[in-house]
Each structure stands twice: as structure tokens, then as C-alpha cells.
Length: 154
Image (cartoon, rainbow, N blue to C red; front, side, top):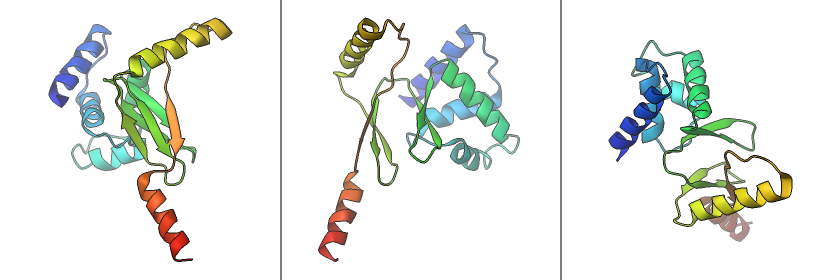
């Protein structure tokens, strides 16, 4: 599936006349295949081993281009950092308020929910809505276990 996603994303960029440099292709491929919601620093650390000609500036510029073309979304973390996610299949995110874990949630109802949310927003604000990103916050199972363990042993 990742390979067809990659080809689809490349075609999308070609249609927008985006120059597909080897570095841009590498970054796009990385984002499609890594569902870890990496930061620019994480992407750089992983890719500098594969491509010694890649720079932080190239990654920032490519990420900005992919966000602008709506292939990637930016997720602001509670600590002020930004993480990125390939958005080829619309989904929402659940964020742990304790450890910062971000997890994708795919659901058949997501498209209808987003459409309803955008319609309600238009009706109440007269905004011309072009995108919506949904985050649900809570405490992940691992942090819940750690909290329970600390309470038992305190």
C-alpha cells in the first residue's frame, strides 16, 4: 500500500508542477512509511544516514511544501514542538497529555464527521472552511498503567 501511496503523492505533486528532487522524494517516502509523527529533527536524524547531502533547511522547506499541498499535516505538540503526518488517508489523532504520544485513528465515520463539522462551522461563522484537523486528548494506556502503578506503590 505504501508504494501506491507514494506514487499517488508523486503524481499529485507533478500535477502541481512541483520539482521532484531526490531529497523531496526521500522525505515524502519517509513520511508515508513512518507513522511516528516525526519532528523535523527526527526526520533529519533518520535520513542523514541515507543521504549525506540532506540538510535541515531542505527538510523544513520540503515539509512546508507538502503541508501547503495538503499531503502532510502539521501537529502542534503541547511542548511547542511540531510533528508531521502524511495525510493520504484522512484520519484524526489522539494525543496523550502526559507523554505526548500521537496516534492515528482511522474510522469509517470520520469523513461524515468532518463534513458535518465543516458545515456547522460555515453556518455559525461564515468561514469558508478548506481543512479541518481533529485532535482528541487524553492519557494513553501506558501512562494510565504507570499512574496506577505509582498510586499502588505510594
